[in-house]
Length: 105
Image 1 (cartoon, one colour):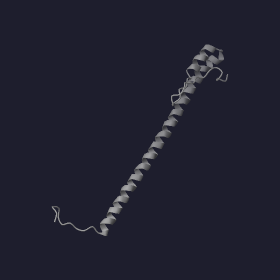
Image 2: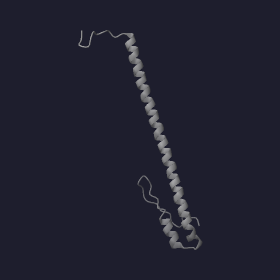
Image 3: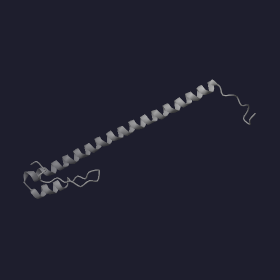
Image 4: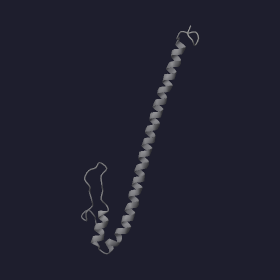
């Protein structure tokens, strides 16, 4: 006899209960992983759409300010606007900037 009471032998009902508990635990793990993956995918989609909206707003602002330089053929102002379009890649590669040859006037 132990301090907690009599020790009873492990029977088939106990093994079945343990197996059910293990199945519930694994099902919970799979469900949590699936929910985490879905949340990560949604966050990525939201980030990309927000970045696209920001780029669109910046392009609208640039288009509004470049129109005067195009109308008056102001090449120095156009060069300043194009210099503002410097692109720095995410991977840390070399910087690329648009040149007047890249612009389609």
